[in-house]
Amino acid sequence: MKTIVLVPPLTEPVTLLEAKEQLRIEPAFTEDDSYISSLISVARERCESYCNQYFTEQDIKILYSGSIPSVVSLPYPSLTVTSVTYTDSDNAQQTVNPINYIVDSTNQTITFTNTYSALNYQVLATTSAPPKINGVQQAIKLILTDLYELRTETAVGVSLAENPAVKAVLYPYRESLGI
Image (cartoon, rainbow, N blue to C red; front, side):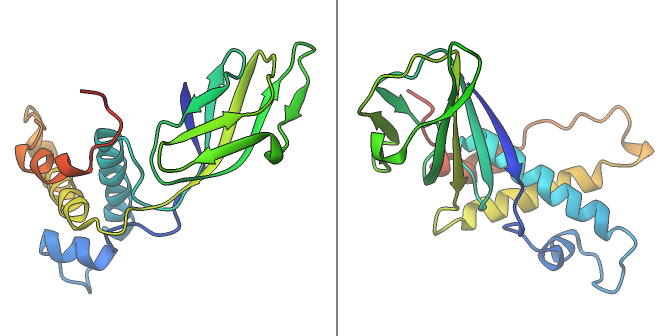
C-alpha cells in the first residue's frame, strides 16, 4: 500500500502568525515567511506520519496491489471515499460503481458486493481533521522551533533528535498502528 497526496491542504493547522509568535519573530519581519511556511508543512507532515492520520483536508490516492478483496481496511480515520478504480487483466482502468461497495467510516472499511479481478486498485478519498487538535498544533510548533533554530551553519554537527515533548502531546492522536 502506498498513499499519494493529490491536492495538498489549503490551510495549515498552525498559521504563519502563530508560528512567528512561537519563534518570537516580529510579525513585521517577513524575510523568512516562505521558509517558515514550508517548515509548518514539514512539521505537520511529521505529525501526520507519526500519528497515521491527517490533520487537514487533503485529497489522497491510496494504491494497493493485487485483486480487490471483499473487505478493504482503510489505513486512515475520517476519510470520505470519492471513488474506487482498478486495473483489470487487460491493463484497462475501470471504475467500481459506488452502488457496489459500502464505506463503513466507524470500522474504516470498504465492503464490496461484487468480486473484481485486478492487477491493482486505488481508493481516492478526502481526508478531514479531527475536531480537536490542540495537542497537534503544539507539536507542530515544537517541531517548527527545532527546525528553525537548527537551520544555520552553526548547528552543523548538532543532532535533531526526537523531542520527547512532541511524542507526549501526539500520543493520544495515534491511529490504527496495531498494538
